[in-house]
Length: 190
Image 1: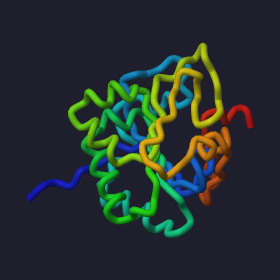
Image 2: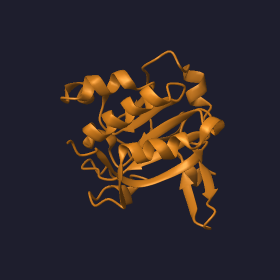
Image 3: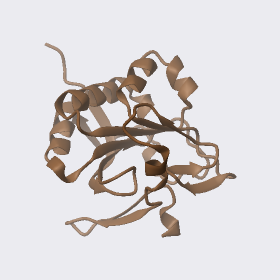
Image 4: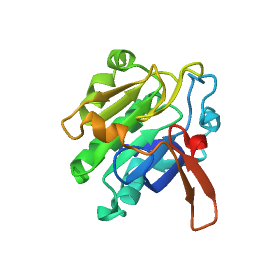
């Protein structure tokens, strides 16, 4: 019997507006070896997860949102440093919720991802990839790009670039438990 694939998670937000087009279920993977200087989310860099969750459990959380979300956004940390988990999650979403779009942020470039063993298979599952390491000296903070060197790749016909550019630069989310989260590519500009 095979063990279920698990994801090392930093956090999730069930309904975000600043992580892609429409209302999205946002997921932050834990662990990033790239550690870009000036990264907005350095607490996602250590490999010790805040939560380890089976892919099926995470998919159930996403599906529980029903029609309230348009898609799923995966960020980090670095999602492509957990390629088996990212592929299992993407394929499960495609199978069980094909109406949801999938957008992934990565510090790796598309070319670097294509060279990874699971890279081509992963790219086939995504609608949008925002790639490239954050460049502290080239801040941008719009169009889902934190720095000017990052590139938006439309990998399906789901979205047009104007829809990506229209995403808010940041948001403040106050949870039912009173926890405050700040999210987006330039949330300090709110």
